[in-house]
View 1 (cartoon, rainbow over the protein chains, first blue to last red):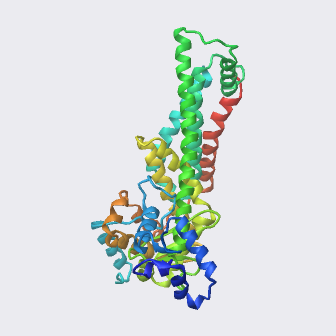
View 2 (tube, one colour):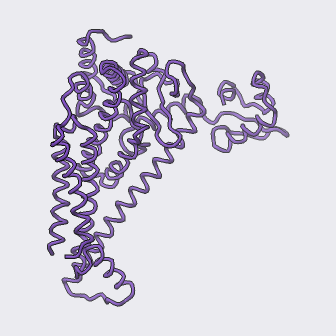
Length: 110
Length: 311
């Protein structure tokens, strides 16, 4: 998937295998993985002569955003029942808490 | 009619008790005991509320409320007890129908919320398998390249702890260890299962302040309980500074789209958690804990007894 994300345009199975040269994967293995990625909706493919060309359906950032939003959403609508470490605090409360941190004897880092 | 009165009293008492419990101070001292009491109140309320309605809807009390209602219903279905059209029996029918609707609503929201949660987790797992990587700073956790500070756990059989790259930059190694210990406590003690019925209750009764309040109270208690577990292994200060740093950074650095989805910390919950870490109050005494246990037992046993014992 990383190869697809890096590529500026769609790739054939052979091109993906070429970029995974250090992994020494069989051509058929790469083909199977790409096939499964497209079935799950992560990659789109189109016919190009006798081969399929694959590209990522969405950018990596889009998936990261989806992952984080669904995890951190607490409105209860798409709730995955994930217990977050801590709710975010904002504005004046954040400043008050940072002051509290300094009162603990060490200033905030960064 | 006594049975119906008792059930109605239990249902009303549970609602009253939940609003008192939500503002009480002692749950912060013994979160585990308070969580048990919340569960008992929730279960007791459900049994008593359904029982009151179907109790009003049944004519006899020969087999206890539940048994009588069941025999009356099968009677209707067999045609042995023809539906008559008097005012009283019409009122009974309405109550019986309302009770059955409430019961099926409760079961339905629990099932649908469970299914939605499982689907969302499955999606999380697939995305994590594509996006996340390990990091020697947080052994056993998955790191996602996301600039804002965030940490959460994905419970279940294939559990995972997820930490954003922003958190790695923000915290030192001791604080990261405290975060991991906190999330491991959630996973080990299946806090997700504790929360599930309260999420369902909130979803089923969106208009209800009490349901929202109950969910928030239990969610906070679960966090406090996990905090307590961390204190067994690590000093309170590491966890407190980790909480403050992640809490403050999450609000400041989250992208605009993410902020909108995050409920602000209305009740000063972060501050409450930090305060009890740095200035711990003694947990409840044994007699007080016993009292909580008795109250929890009564909230469930009384409605069950009235439902099944004929009198």
